[in-house]
Image (cartoon, rainbow, N blue to C red; front, top):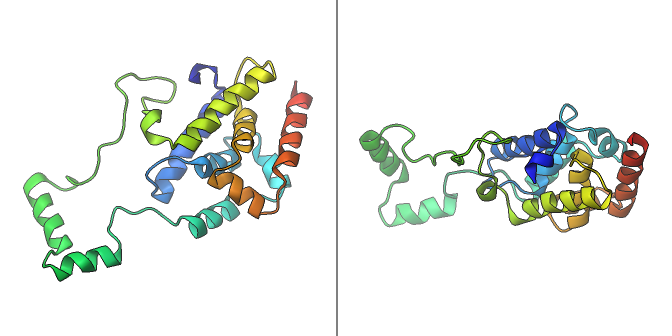
Length: 193
């Protein structure tokens, strides 16, 4: 499927991975795809979303409100519970890094053995089931429209069609009508054809 992605659509997928990393989240979700679509350098649909009143700052703010930023650290309550039974996390981390080297506790980056159009990223392990569904629906949208390639617009259509992820929630809470945004996106595709 990914061989049918345009350069711009591939950039959106890469941008979603970068957004996930920037926010410290474990998996790429629909919200990260939306942030990548809003990146003006990566996406032709950024203007369409901006016209509808959506920008990356507002989406990031909404994501922070809904799910926060990721962290590798335990929460304060977990750390306190461990301290109460005599376990000092800082001392444990220090001892492990002393024995195995700095960064020994960091997970290795998920890379596939085969280098492909996404630079060897193992998308199956990095993407949430909803984000994978959005990409699958992007393919279905392109097929339904009889387009040979999958572009950023198709990813937006897939995101809107999936309709249940955090991205859809953020868009509807911002006052957008997903059906209207879908219509505008289809109109934009028709004008470009």
